[in-house]
Image (cartoon, rainbow, N blue to C red; front, side, top):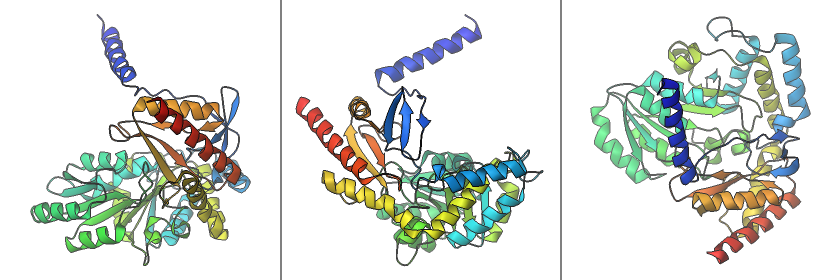
Length: 391
């Protein structure tokens, strides 16, 4: 057997295992007609699982800003930020994001995943301690493990457990970090930031909050920290440009000193080509639109509340509503049935979520219409009742 054959045999075996567990992923061609309408296999579907919370990826002013930037600056940046990739729009965006989030400085990365691969390893290493929420995003875990620091996982949003871990392990570590999502991407709940930041402060631990799903949707658009009164601002506020801002890229808002350090030490920044001008210009225009229309940021949560009221679900605190169905097979079945009724709601399965908690992750956009939300709620209620009756 050649190395090509052994590699294919290995891959085939792994795929067979995934198929048996209903865990194989297969991307499907999806054409986006507008912010909430897609086409699959010649059918038009209402998209209820996108992260384009404000519909800005299809906003004409955002599109025009990207077009103008491309015409002026070209389609790519040509190099990393530290070589020749530092075009003026990037500096403007960093200044705007820092002002928006209320920090001294900001650093823009190629993506949110790259940002989280960069931040933790640039600040801690061997001899240090990282404490991370068990439901934090995969890229926060990747950055924590890449750092070489000791990693301790605390139960989801369990501040007593976090306190115990800090009390047990902090004294033996040189530096410590606490890592969490601001809005948890698969459950839609919020981290208890005021309590968490107070604990971290007691133990001189630096808190990194991933606000990918908070910016643009909570706190008047400023994110999960501003969902609390007073605002619970962490020293390290990370987020993305690719969700509510309708563009692409990631960022870290922090002090000027911290950002300066990462400009030299963050490997995913130093060794990655800078964002294309179109993405930066689109994000800048999205920030303009958010600032000009406060109701835009409030609408996704209002629609989520409308949906949950119709189904008798708990009141949501973000535009993300999970409908946990248990098995992967059941989640796939209900997702397929919803698609037949005109809705795109992708089934979320392990390892993205814990075993036994496969679900539909429903997200709401400012571009959704109320009657579409009402139809989705009615369809889902009917389908889940049928599945339960058949069991």
